[in-house]
Length: 547
Image (cartoon, rainbow, N blue to C red):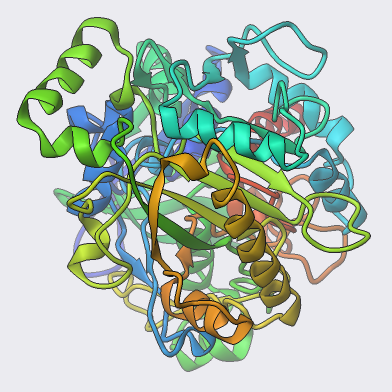
């Protein structure tokens, strides 16, 4: 329905539904689908970006093209990072239907079962692994063997890389030779060891939340999805969230919620939207000229991310993407293979295999994740860092599974168009540095072990001249970057300082929940996408129960 809201310089179109979801990313797609399953419940989902119609979104290998073009991206940058020599780090986040789930590298790993027990122990009661496992199972359709830990009837198709490259197979074999277990299922009862990655790919295409969840639900008359709607603020009256204001192609619009407003804009935009709406550290908001609704000092705090370092190798010809794409005939064959069979390297995302390993004496579980990548880049800085090397090459990268470094996010100004101030604070915790240095030593051991060693001609980065710990740390500081897993900026917990409670309700405001990676108390040990989907699945039950 259309009406007019008075106040301000211009009239705003007004709409109403039971639930208004601000953010059409991974979590938003799950919420919109699950809540609209009840035909008596009306749902509106609003996304700042466009529909996911670009064909490169749906080709798994297309993630690299999307990364370079930055067309479906918020294009964030961190502030100058003190422990990285003053470098700013580019943080891509999806700005399209499906969010980062439409542009990410498609690696689908839950992390450690203990990650979720730590959530519960930290105060997020009801989010232990035992609580979360039914929702992990509910969301997936696993292509592997039956297991009490895996789902078979969910919307997300998940399976191992079907045709691992020569380099991937050699990487796995080398890790096994070094004594690591060949894990049959990194998403099963335990995640330690090495295995080809599991991907959310089905019939050679990216199986994003937009495709798996939202697309089948679009025919429902009680579900409305609007794109190109940039959130401006959450409307709060008498302590209750009653809707949101967005800017669309025709100007400002108001979308009112009869039951709840669900904020699913991600680890960067969700805390920004709360602060712009008057929910945050009171003095900072007043300095920005923002009327304080709730003094919530932890909004934007507790920022966590996985910090990654690459080791790149010049390889013997062994089917790396570098050599395939450098040859027009082979490149054409790559495309033809995908077009006819929906297989081959175009059906693989960012990396093909992962090793979860312990590197510290007496550790109870893995501290580091290694990922094998069947291509290498021309460098670590500048334009060459986004271009394939001219020679055959592959890479593996590694990151600390559970970093102790913590960052924060604040408003740059009260202007919605201004990106927030992001301080990742990478490597500010000495424990993170120690694990990275020990991981680099393990990386060199993997590279020196057959059959992986037999494919390597030379180490390009960091290079054999990087030998001492001081030299390696200099390399880590100069070349390290994000693995694209920011989270934690609206921490969930039982204590009164937490931004949201255990049912994801924003403290101090009725009718408002946050459902996305920003509520994670702690970053999972691996890629965070499965945890986001699990969170949204469970949130949909909590919301329906409350109604």
